[in-house]
Length: 496
Image (cartoon, rainbow, N blue to C red; front, side):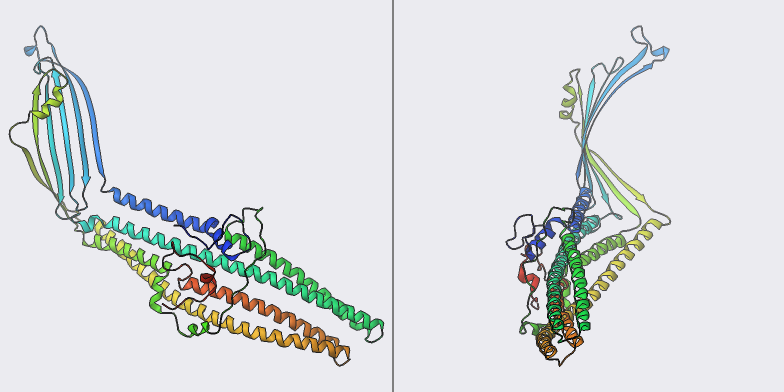
């Protein structure tokens, strides 16, 4: 599978969101592990198909034997039988998907001894052998069950890989927004610290002019110390968010890789687009999720094996057929061994037989049927549970998007109002109409409201990405062909 991510190029993170996605696709370990699982399933399918491969058989056997003769059969020239035998075999065995086994073979025997075979006769046999199952193992549907189940498992692994890719992309996107939020929160903390320093300078100047008591200065100094501690904590939060993003991109083991500040801003959600959130995501559309499709394939594979096992008879009845001919050539030359095949007897050799096997207790068949039935039912229950969980999660994520958008609107309104409140409190304090506690409280609320806007923007951006992931629209229906763009990461999906 190959994914392209916009116009991102190179191996370094430049601060763009699409760079984070590209590096995730290249280096994230779980994506690599899911890809190896896909390769494993491909190998399992090859093994299942190997049951119908044609196997060639060749063999050579050379023998030398010496046996003493009875005294009555001895002669002055021969007191024992000395014989040499050379046998050559060429054959093939192929099991058809119908269950029939076809095994053509060619055998040549060349015998030479000092008593009877003075002419070194060579015999050749050509035979075409068939084994036809009449009960157990009969039919294409049974014999291809393992192959068809392996195909479903392979398709499941492919869907699982796509689900893992979408999951890892969603994780990196959320880590990116956490990194941006931590960076902007640090800026707010620095501004708050600077405001506290300005207030402290004003307080010291007013105290020197005996306009305010010296005790008020101590409160400003305490506020500066408090803001400085919060700024240091924000710097630590930024370092943790940076490390989380590096880990999500799968480049944590590359210490020399730079991690610049995010260059993409939080997405905005137009009010007109939010109307689509009033309409629930269709329950039937959840079947397009990659994890649901993967589980459905596992259900299909389990049901294929169960049906094949359940319908397979307990007893075995095989019909064996063989047709061919034999030839003979008497010649001391080595070529006579092959010439024997050109001197067949008139008429064909033929044989027919029946082989019947009846397991008395039948425990193996009954136990296998129960195992396959349990596995199929387990897979169906897991699919039902996955669909229920997906439906609930989509509902929660849709509510999260709406809630984050509404909270962002309120947070921005709070900042606008609190900015004016802080300015008014500062004027009132200078006029002696407000206390230092009123001013510090107004500044703390302004800082908290500014941080609230950042947090609301972060939660909205993450809710959009998570909603895309849960509705299987982060990559699109064809995950290996869909281009990952900023639009697919930062906007609401359209209803199917």
